[in-house]
Image (cartoon, rainbow, N blue to C red; front, side):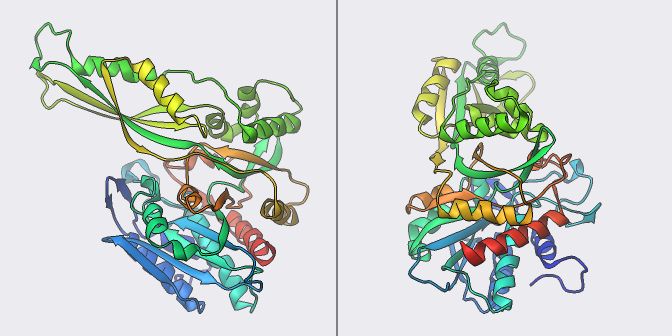
Length: 433
């Protein structure tokens, strides 16, 4: 239950409580706090008269679900889902305790404030608003809070979809994170609605050489070989390739900026702080994220490894891997550590119309444009059940706030006013969609 006695609005108190659960996901099966956060969510749902169900396929990797009955049970159900885990935070790099849930300058600070305990709180507070007022949604709502999203859902949504498909019985659409928030384009506010996600391919580069003394003349050096491959891949300028969604995005950016027909990268630059986020959606990206080699200063190792986070446009996974192997060369092994699917659904239909309409009620006249997310969400797991997923965590943000830069960044924070706005929009959507 939300912390009592606070003068914060309920949606912010819930988000604050969730931030205070250290649910760090280190990857590779190592995490903390997901069970405790899931039990908090379950207790809140139970206080509303709902019947939460838990699924913990791996010790302490807890998922929780509840179904809210709708007025028209014959309609397909809508899934509202979030994840409770967060990426690690190095406390020394932050201005505040990353798990303190501190309020400062009208903002709630902490790991998860943006990704995605803000949306978790909006879901819970919006459903509470309806139930406490005696209202019902138009159709059944399936509320699910997953573990392990920050590791690709391997020990979370993928296992839930495999082992508990009955949780999603009758559902055809889903709403989750990283969409519905505002950006500023040439001093005009607009909202991004996420209708697609790039595919994720995590790879490991392995270079082999011959071990030797650090003082030797030694051209067969695994570290050197790996460094050359990493630099080549990390500096590759992948070409812009537009999909249906990004074609619509670029056209909308051109119209808003008065620069229709310009280069897509230049149009993305008109989005200010969000430019890097949008430019990543126009192409493949290959970012080195980890290096492992050696064990003593004067020993040349015979093996060196690098981790590369690869994000590719839907349907181009095999072609991208072939290009990567060409770039790094035949003497570098490319191991696929994890691979999932890309998604793209139309920016059309009753649910999309309802999301656009809900934003329009609370921010009249502000355009809503589609975009393809550079990262990924648990919508990918739900797609295995034929459920079409969207990103819609509505937030009206200050134009000078680098919101997208705080995903997995330092000093993550969200305006409390934006949380209240999002709760109002989401509540209206759930009443009518």
